[in-house]
Length: 115
Length: 112
Image (tube, one colour):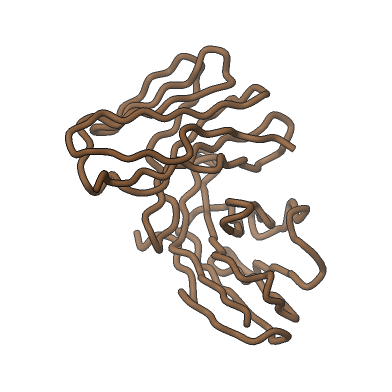
Protein backbone atom coordinates (compact mmCIF):
# COMPACT_ATOMS: atom_id res chain seq x y z
CA UNK A 1 0.00 0.00 0.00
CA UNK A 2 1.27 3.48 -0.84
CA UNK A 3 0.26 5.01 2.46
CA UNK A 4 -1.39 8.39 2.85
CA UNK A 5 -0.37 10.72 0.04
CA UNK A 6 -0.30 14.47 0.47
CA UNK A 7 0.44 17.21 -2.01
CA UNK A 8 2.14 19.52 -2.32
CA UNK A 9 4.92 18.67 0.14
CA UNK A 10 5.92 22.32 0.36
CA UNK A 11 3.99 25.48 -0.39
CA UNK A 12 5.17 29.07 -0.19
CA UNK A 13 2.59 31.73 -0.87
CA UNK A 14 1.85 35.35 -0.19
CA UNK A 15 -0.68 36.64 2.28
CA UNK A 16 -4.13 36.83 0.78
CA UNK A 17 -3.64 34.00 -1.68
CA UNK A 18 -5.75 30.88 -1.73
CA UNK A 19 -4.03 27.65 -0.68
CA UNK A 20 -5.33 24.16 -1.41
CA UNK A 21 -3.84 21.11 0.27
CA UNK A 22 -4.66 17.64 -0.98
CA UNK A 23 -4.83 14.21 0.57
CA UNK A 24 -5.33 10.71 -0.78
CA UNK A 25 -6.17 8.27 2.02
CA UNK A 26 -5.10 4.66 2.32
CA UNK A 27 -7.50 2.58 0.26
CA UNK A 28 -10.33 1.21 2.38
CA UNK A 29 -9.86 3.62 5.27
CA UNK A 30 -13.12 5.29 6.18
CA UNK A 31 -11.84 7.94 8.60
CA UNK A 32 -9.84 10.95 7.44
CA UNK A 33 -8.37 13.56 9.77
CA UNK A 34 -6.72 16.91 9.05
CA UNK A 35 -4.18 18.14 11.61
CA UNK A 36 -2.02 21.22 11.93
CA UNK A 37 1.36 21.16 13.67
CA UNK A 38 3.18 24.21 15.02
CA UNK A 39 5.94 24.63 17.56
CA UNK A 40 3.67 26.62 19.84
CA UNK A 41 0.54 24.48 19.75
CA UNK A 42 1.78 21.04 18.76
CA UNK A 43 -0.56 18.76 16.81
CA UNK A 44 -4.10 20.03 16.60
CA UNK A 45 -7.06 18.32 14.99
CA UNK A 46 -8.82 20.61 12.53
CA UNK A 47 -11.59 18.41 11.13
CA UNK A 48 -12.39 14.78 10.51
CA UNK A 49 -14.56 12.85 8.08
CA UNK A 50 -16.21 9.45 8.34
CA UNK A 51 -17.35 7.85 5.09
CA UNK A 52 -16.73 11.17 3.32
CA UNK A 53 -19.03 13.09 5.69
CA UNK A 54 -17.58 15.86 7.91
CA UNK A 55 -18.25 14.82 11.50
CA UNK A 56 -16.47 17.39 13.64
CA UNK A 57 -15.01 20.66 12.39
CA UNK A 58 -14.72 22.34 15.78
CA UNK A 59 -10.96 22.59 15.38
CA UNK A 60 -11.12 24.67 12.22
CA UNK A 61 -9.66 28.03 13.24
CA UNK A 62 -12.04 30.29 11.35
CA UNK A 63 -14.14 30.65 8.25
CA UNK A 64 -11.07 31.08 6.10
CA UNK A 65 -10.54 27.33 6.46
CA UNK A 66 -12.70 24.80 4.64
CA UNK A 67 -12.37 21.09 3.94
CA UNK A 68 -14.11 18.74 1.57
CA UNK A 69 -14.12 15.04 0.84
CA UNK A 70 -15.93 14.54 -2.46
CA UNK A 71 -15.17 10.82 -2.56
CA UNK A 72 -13.46 8.06 -0.61
CA UNK A 73 -10.09 8.64 -2.23
CA UNK A 74 -9.63 12.39 -2.06
CA UNK A 75 -9.87 15.28 0.38
CA UNK A 76 -8.87 18.93 0.28
CA UNK A 77 -8.15 21.56 2.90
CA UNK A 78 -8.47 25.09 1.61
CA UNK A 79 -7.36 28.36 3.18
CA UNK A 80 -8.77 31.52 1.63
CA UNK A 81 -7.41 34.09 2.15
CA UNK A 82 -4.18 32.84 3.71
CA UNK A 83 -2.40 34.74 6.49
CA UNK A 84 1.16 34.48 7.87
CA UNK A 85 -0.15 32.87 11.08
CA UNK A 86 -1.40 29.95 8.98
CA UNK A 87 2.22 28.90 8.41
CA UNK A 88 2.51 25.38 9.77
CA UNK A 89 2.78 21.76 8.75
CA UNK A 90 -0.58 20.27 7.78
CA UNK A 91 -1.04 16.54 8.08
CA UNK A 92 -3.69 14.24 6.77
CA UNK A 93 -4.21 10.97 8.65
CA UNK A 94 -6.55 8.08 7.96
CA UNK A 95 -7.81 5.05 9.82
CA UNK A 96 -10.03 2.03 9.38
CA UNK A 97 -12.95 1.61 11.76
CA UNK A 98 -12.97 -2.10 11.07
CA UNK A 99 -9.65 -2.37 12.90
CA UNK A 100 -9.53 0.70 15.14
CA UNK A 101 -10.25 4.30 14.30
CA UNK A 102 -7.65 5.37 16.85
CA UNK A 103 -4.72 3.84 15.00
CA UNK A 104 -4.25 6.63 12.55
CA UNK A 105 -1.71 6.63 9.74
CA UNK A 106 -0.22 9.97 8.86
CA UNK A 107 0.87 11.35 5.53
CA UNK A 108 4.21 13.13 5.11
CA UNK A 109 2.62 16.54 5.58
CA UNK A 110 2.48 19.80 3.64
CA UNK A 111 4.81 22.51 4.89
CA UNK A 112 3.06 25.82 4.35
CA UNK A 113 4.76 29.17 4.57
CA UNK A 114 2.65 32.28 4.10
CA UNK A 115 4.71 35.42 3.58
CA UNK B 1 -9.52 20.79 27.27
CA UNK B 2 -7.80 17.49 27.77
CA UNK B 3 -4.05 17.59 28.06
CA UNK B 4 -1.40 14.93 27.86
CA UNK B 5 1.83 15.79 29.63
CA UNK B 6 4.97 14.13 28.35
CA UNK B 7 8.25 13.98 30.16
CA UNK B 8 10.98 14.62 29.70
CA UNK B 9 10.51 17.27 27.04
CA UNK B 10 13.90 16.38 25.62
CA UNK B 11 16.69 13.98 26.33
CA UNK B 12 20.12 13.07 25.07
CA UNK B 13 20.98 9.47 24.38
CA UNK B 14 24.22 7.64 23.89
CA UNK B 15 24.27 4.61 21.68
CA UNK B 16 23.54 1.49 23.68
CA UNK B 17 21.68 3.25 26.47
CA UNK B 18 18.14 2.42 27.53
CA UNK B 19 15.68 5.31 27.27
CA UNK B 20 12.42 5.89 29.14
CA UNK B 21 9.70 8.45 28.73
CA UNK B 22 6.18 8.79 30.01
CA UNK B 23 2.86 10.42 29.39
CA UNK B 24 0.27 11.41 31.98
CA UNK B 25 -3.27 12.67 31.87
CA UNK B 26 -5.65 14.10 34.44
CA UNK B 27 -8.42 11.93 33.07
CA UNK B 28 -8.89 8.33 32.04
CA UNK B 29 -7.96 7.12 28.60
CA UNK B 30 -9.10 3.81 27.12
CA UNK B 31 -6.42 3.71 24.46
CA UNK B 32 -2.82 4.85 24.41
CA UNK B 33 -0.82 5.33 21.25
CA UNK B 34 2.86 6.06 20.77
CA UNK B 35 4.12 7.74 17.62
CA UNK B 36 7.57 8.73 16.40
CA UNK B 37 8.18 11.67 14.10
CA UNK B 38 11.39 12.03 12.11
CA UNK B 39 12.43 15.46 10.79
CA UNK B 40 10.40 16.42 7.75
CA UNK B 41 8.05 13.47 8.04
CA UNK B 42 4.68 12.65 9.52
CA UNK B 43 4.25 10.77 12.80
CA UNK B 44 4.56 7.00 12.47
CA UNK B 45 2.60 4.72 14.77
CA UNK B 46 4.89 2.61 16.97
CA UNK B 47 2.66 0.89 19.49
CA UNK B 48 -1.04 0.87 20.36
CA UNK B 49 -2.31 -0.16 23.81
CA UNK B 50 -5.93 -1.03 24.52
CA UNK B 51 -6.07 -2.54 28.03
CA UNK B 52 -5.04 -1.23 31.43
CA UNK B 53 -1.85 -2.96 32.51
CA UNK B 54 -1.06 -4.08 28.97
CA UNK B 55 2.63 -4.36 28.11
CA UNK B 56 3.43 -4.46 24.40
CA UNK B 57 6.71 -4.67 22.56
CA UNK B 58 7.75 -3.74 19.06
CA UNK B 59 11.37 -4.70 18.56
CA UNK B 60 13.46 -2.67 21.01
CA UNK B 61 10.43 -0.63 22.02
CA UNK B 62 8.21 -1.54 24.94
CA UNK B 63 5.16 0.42 26.04
CA UNK B 64 2.86 -0.03 28.98
CA UNK B 65 -0.70 1.09 29.63
CA UNK B 66 -0.79 2.29 33.25
CA UNK B 67 -3.22 0.52 35.55
CA UNK B 68 -4.78 3.83 36.59
CA UNK B 69 -5.56 4.44 32.89
CA UNK B 70 -4.06 7.90 33.34
CA UNK B 71 -0.54 7.19 32.18
CA UNK B 72 1.62 5.28 29.77
CA UNK B 73 5.32 4.58 29.45
CA UNK B 74 7.61 3.98 26.50
CA UNK B 75 11.01 2.36 26.83
CA UNK B 76 13.66 2.03 24.15
CA UNK B 77 16.36 -0.51 24.85
CA UNK B 78 19.91 -0.37 23.51
CA UNK B 79 19.34 2.89 21.66
CA UNK B 80 20.85 3.46 18.25
CA UNK B 81 21.37 6.73 16.32
CA UNK B 82 18.18 6.28 14.28
CA UNK B 83 16.13 6.42 17.48
CA UNK B 84 16.59 10.19 17.33
CA UNK B 85 13.32 11.99 16.74
CA UNK B 86 10.24 13.22 18.54
CA UNK B 87 8.05 10.70 20.36
CA UNK B 88 4.39 11.53 20.90
CA UNK B 89 1.82 9.87 23.07
CA UNK B 90 -1.81 10.15 22.06
CA UNK B 91 -5.19 8.91 23.09
CA UNK B 92 -8.90 9.57 22.73
CA UNK B 93 -10.32 11.43 25.72
CA UNK B 94 -13.58 9.98 27.00
CA UNK B 95 -16.65 11.55 25.39
CA UNK B 96 -14.50 13.32 22.80
CA UNK B 97 -15.87 11.35 19.92
CA UNK B 98 -13.40 9.99 17.41
CA UNK B 99 -10.71 12.52 18.26
CA UNK B 100 -7.17 12.02 19.50
CA UNK B 101 -5.32 14.28 21.89
CA UNK B 102 -1.55 14.42 21.44
CA UNK B 103 1.11 15.10 24.02
CA UNK B 104 3.72 17.79 23.45
CA UNK B 105 6.36 15.23 22.55
CA UNK B 106 9.69 14.04 23.90
CA UNK B 107 12.58 15.07 21.69
CA UNK B 108 15.34 12.47 21.66
CA UNK B 109 18.76 13.76 20.65
CA UNK B 110 22.19 12.20 20.38
CA UNK B 111 24.84 13.17 22.92
CA UNK B 112 27.60 15.15 21.23
